[in-house]
Image (cartoon, rainbow, N blue to C red; front, side):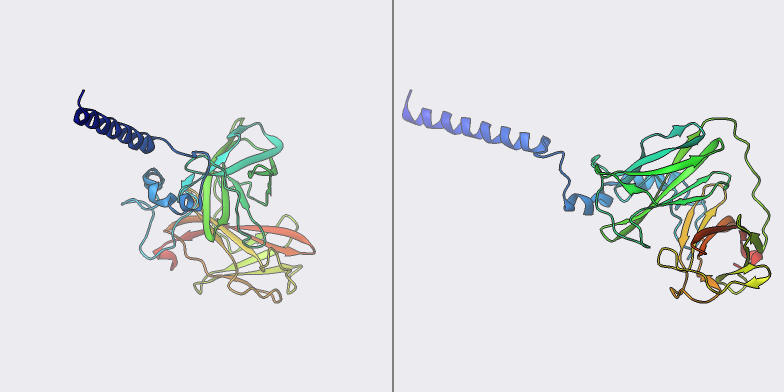
Length: 301
């Protein structure tokens, strides 16, 4: 074989080896188990399925609940911006047992880095789909990066679980359903009233005629003026829309911890009926008052 022929064959062999390396590099992940900061930042750019889920849940699709200029509805999707809420057990018997869950990326790795927001790194809201049995919990993070919290659900039914958190400076609200075994008798949503009484006997009066939402707390007919700070604020307000349970978590307009009124600026994402859950602190205890509000043109909103 001539020298020229040998050189030609050697060159062809090198070309084949190079092509094989390029092909292998295009299909193999050099470290599939490791997520990088770049992966997290790019998560929303690779989530068409999440966007479809939003439309299916009625958040932004044409003809759904959204209204021009209104606040964006949250908590309608289990996955958003490349993150997903995963419950370890989506069904359970009635009673008390821990609830365990994780926040995972699209590649299945568990998110471990969470920001402190309103004095906690994770806020968990649990409510039955008929808007009864409201609970606001603060889970503890486990060594594996997941979360765990004791949870008592005494009645059967379908419950909505909202994970409200911030990670790397971005706030998220993810929702998932939790089913409790047994016969489910849905309750009718109470009619709108301007007064509610907490289990501890405090009377709470609501006034939203001026645009903002204002609450005043009374004990034995006298207005309470020494409301204590709760999670770095004078109170917390969660509003849930009847039907799909679109979620709003609002904090007072003023962070002052002395005074009487608790005021919120609330932007409802659409017309409809909402259940408002106000939480405030007195005598070292957290108290909850619930109100039904009808939002629509005929009510001045």
